[in-house]
Length: 471
Ligand code: 2AM
Image 1 (cartoon, rainbow, N blue to C red):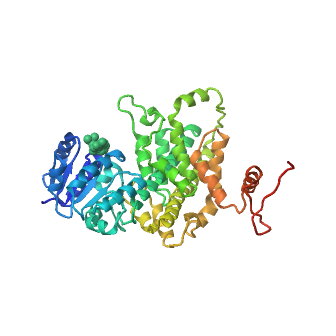
Image 2: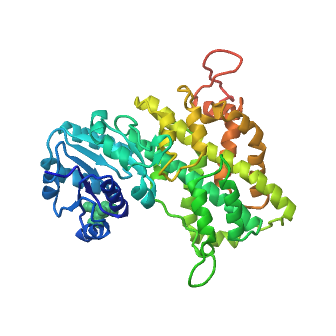
Image 3: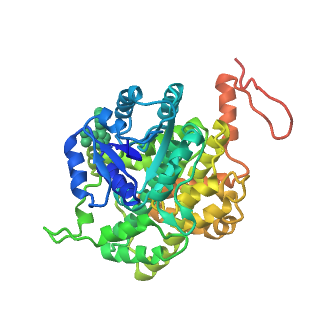
């Protein structure tokens, strides 16, 4: 009994996390269904890393200091349940299981119940940062029983990305809180990626800029407090990359059918369950889904697409780029607004008491969302009553000043037959949020007409129903 922790699941994320944890001096037992990956990890470890390969679960569990800590880094879904069923008979009350995968928070809540009924702690824990983050320090979003978290806290705090504001890991709340926050993180990520892609589309398709010229614009944006982001940084590198075989920019050779693993989709589905509108994120999810149906796009593009793109003078391009930067900032802000609003509402309904400012803080390092804008988001949520970012005095002046830029971006798309779904979603929702009256009075009248669903009036108290026509 000598190992501090067990890690199950040695795909790249699991391997890198193992190396990360070992680098901090912990002794780690590892297991993978397919033993070749265990050998891969052993080949990668440095001589000082205390990584012990186990080739069955009994050996793995038997090698651990009690209370035992077991980190699962396996594919979300059935594999997690399979491992849990195998592990339960090997564990003792007080042992801690951490699911570090992208599990659905409802699965996590069910598993937590099952594990706690058996006397174990179960921590559904989101981990973001991709392969590099797992190795160098990811953003870690743990949820579950706080006493269980405290048993593993030291390891997680050390493994996490370190910023000047501390490690990117904080206890988020009971039940599925950790995986819920990670899911919303991924939803925001979908939107930020889509918005960058739409900005790229404007430059590539309408302004006819080549990839390095677009990269140059991204580079300038990346120096701005409100626009800087990891996703812009990697996009710059992507746009500069030449295919070694053909010499073309690789981006121009990549098929446009986007794939997804489902966490963005869950964000959209669950946002509707909580009654939170997240159109910027939804549009990003839909954009991927639609892109994948390429055969339909090819058929239709030959039939109805009117490619009447205007041409842009140098001066028009320069002016549009200024609007595009501000529009992108506002649209990014809308994506964060949607995600944080979802967290606010879910936190209230589930009684999680999510620390929104701290969530912004732990997203500042290690994870895919990292951007300096999160400093201001963190600041805005110092107000514990803040429901939505766009209601914060931190952002109201920018929203007033830059709304016209977001409109201008949308207009460029409309006038040139360029679909900009996430920009349009961000704009439409910002306009709706700032409308004291909406046309939903007519919806209410229609509902009352065909279903006697009743309506309220603005000039009188009460619930009304009208016999709209003579029978
Ligand atoms: P593998 O290397 O044996 O495929 C990510 O896919 C990780 O989850 C990998 O470590 C993978 O193990 C593991 N995994 C996926 N499906 C699994 C299953 N049904 N049973 C056990 N491990 C699984």
